[in-house]
Amino acid sequence: MSKYRQALPQADGRLFLSDGGMETALIFLQGVDLPQFAAFVLLESESGRAELVRYYEKFLPIARDRGVGFLLDTATWRASLDWGRSLGFDADRLTAVNIAAVELIAGLRGRWETPTTPIVLNGAIGPRGDGYKAGRMDVAEARDYHAFQVGIFAGTQVDMVSAITMNTVNEAVGIALAAKAADVPCVVSFTVETDGKLVDGTTLRAAIEATEEATGASPAYYMVNCAHPTHFEQALERDEAWVGRIRGIRANASAKSHSELDDSDTLDIGDIVGLSGHYKALTSAFPSMRVLGGCCGTDHRHLAAIGEAVAPN
Image (cartoon, rainbow, N blue to C red):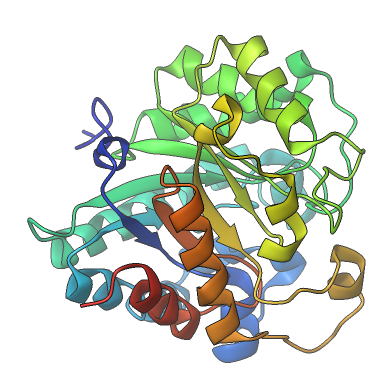
């Protein structure tokens, strides 16, 4: 049974931190092999689950020590049907790893949650295709495809689901509608290119407003992830209603473009202090942004700096 599904604590404006770039940290910092960039494969072994716990427990103390909430993601960004099949996982095996992912973070909540650090369990759902290349699904196809993973999460302890690294409106709408049908709170997180637009040229404003219209404004809120703040800061406008619906940021460490990151075989951790400064400026200019984490290239060092910048002791 979920704990916060009926009333997400981050909705009342309190500050929440999250983790960083799970896959990049596991590969480059922990030396874990992730085929197809898929962390869910670790859930099938004791050693793999231990690596995930090792990863998560670098972040949880940061939130607890600062007395802020924590949004705890499942390791399931690629645990959907197409990605699963490419790695030899049928539907039953995928169902099992999605459930195992929830059980793992539920156990962590049991050990780390305090009255001042509520921990929200978030079912992470990634794009059907590549996070950096525009998909071609219509809304109905996206809804039906992602209903598989949403349906699994609906039957677990997760408090919400998140559509992460969305690069088309249709896929974002499809996931939001699947979550709405399953009566699970949903967050939509778009990714943008260096010009602040989705890869197909859609502006961030147009993407959010179109999703709002197509879903009856059903998403709990919106986020931006997998882009450096310098890529999307210029797209934001103060006192605009659509910007007020953006409640979180999970930025990349690097200011490089998606294509540059795709071509790189080394990890660019960027400027940690500089990144935390961008977060401080964004949260000051846009007070609705209260859920702060990282994406590719970020780790616990980045989150510690962000925490210090936005919630100094």
